[in-house]
Image (cartoon, protein in one colour):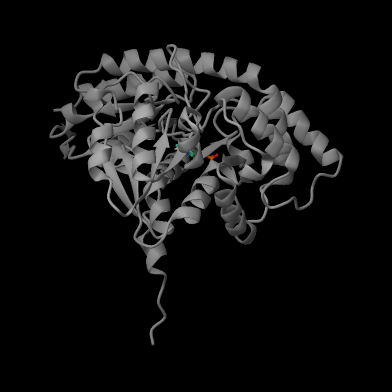
Length: 399
Ligand SMILES: Cc1ncc(COP(=O)(O)O)c(C=O)c1O
């Protein structure tokens, strides 16, 4: 019998975003001045009060295994945060602390999916959702969001896709990669649909704090008792507090689901890092001021990058109201050539940009969204100016 490998693992598509990032970093390491619009993380240092809490945790010996669902103090802090910011009432047994929001989302999917179940994923979507659904034995069902509709989820289209196998929908508002923020009216309609057709909602709220132009983040679970009972809210400290490397996320939801997620996590990874858990309490309790200054900086960068994109012929974009990404429509460049090399899709465009203009962007294929590229403005205004100068010169050279 020949040795074989896992079919599920072999089907997992490697992350395009990480591949671009790795190539850009390798070029940088070899001395090339690459400007990165690919990053999915804030460029600010973690706020001092959060680092101080970590130093204190080490000094006081908080360096051992914790309960695998997370320390009670952090789960209590998460409950207070969810009440204060989102009007959601949970008890600590309804909260699990994970290795980043990423593990919380995978854990939620593993807890609810049976083989062949369908999970509705609005596209463009974050790279990991479809792969996580597949890893859990489910089937992603994509519902395209229209750029001309501001990347809103069309709830009637979702309703058309609901089948007896529909187990859940994954929401992400504010949204990666489009930056769209769901309105209360759309959330209400979606909540009604989820309740009437009996499917779960996984609500990924990791970019909650990064909203602009008066946009409001609303958690779908706050819209009624029934929808709360079938929603798993996922959040974390990575994006809001510039703590991507600390790897702390959390999920809140019905106790039986959180219990199943805890069972999986206890065998997969045990607890999230103990020191980072103590630091995350400081983030949730004392981090509001730092969030404001980071959001103000992102807001300035957003206006700068939008005006630069819109001044380049062939590129268009929707104004994003949240997160730190802009989805750029590159349709106007398809069919053109750079130095004899044809641009056939976003993948070839991003490769040409990286190799010739030394700018890293993420091609829309990574998000199930061809003919777009995602630009992250989680970089300095100086880098935005220099990077956009290069993109503009590149585009003006196309034939
Ligand atoms: C939409 C979305 N959800 C979840 C995550 C994962 O967050 P964490 O770093 O806390 O695992 C990311 C990170 O890029 C993201 O963009």
